[in-house]
Length: 155
Figure 1 (cartoon, rainbow, N blue to C red):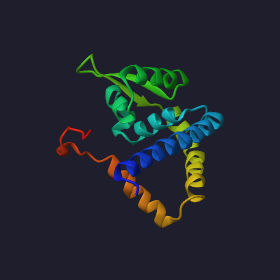
Figure 2 (figure 1 turned 135 degrees about the horizontal axis):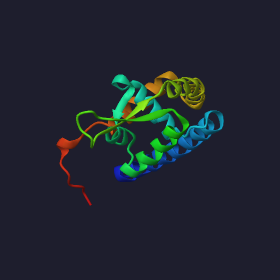
Figure 3 (figure 1 turned 90 degrees about the vertical axis):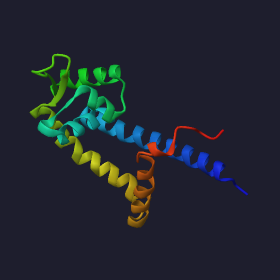
Figure 4 (figure 1 turned 120 degrees about the vertical axis):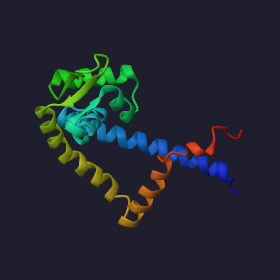
């Protein structure tokens, strides 16, 4: 009989492998077709959905799960390409924003068409509508805040 712990480990391994494989493939397509990594795309998307199409750099880093140095490297490339610009806060010189440029908005629009088609192809070939709904519900449980559950782990 397989224990719940073994099933949990197997599920985690499958999740990590699926994430790595799908991210690698989608990122390669974005890079080949649009010159963007998947992190570049995600940064442009987050900025496009933010008020005034800009976020504090520290908030964007948190949204993308990047370190301060990681967001700096990512934004440097996007700034050089003209997709993002750095804006300073008028009231606090310590605060810097990343703002989506019109060119960045256009690049995001172009990349979204093919990226969404690639995602559709990846999932539609493997899951029906009910399975996709279930998968979404199950995976969303992993991103909810369980801070009320305490910080101790069973060993």
